[in-house]
Image 1 (cartoon, rainbow, N blue to C red):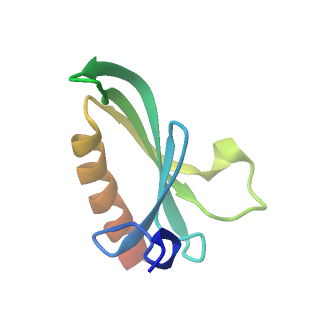
Image 2: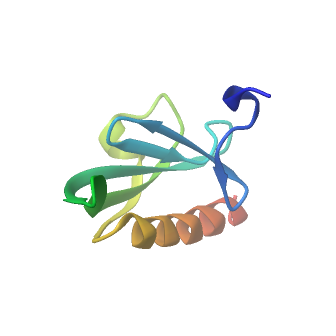
Image 3: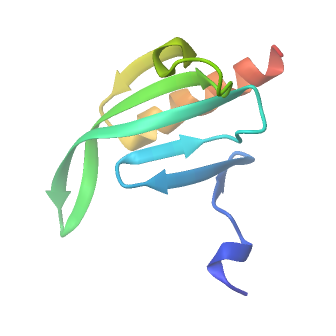
Length: 96
């Protein structure tokens, strides 16, 4: 089976990555999370995120990009950022 057949998910929502941007959630829903890796360090030949921006955004394409942002924060690791992102997304989608 190819890698494309099984999309990467976290807690039931899809993850997509493009360079330093990670999108968490589906564009078919009302909200999505955008994570942006702002800073990273090398540890044992691996890049580790040390500063990550988290934004809860509307998926409405008619809104300007700055008007889409509902909430935002910065975290010091990808793990902490994903933890906040999953809570924000679940709460936002539950309050449709």
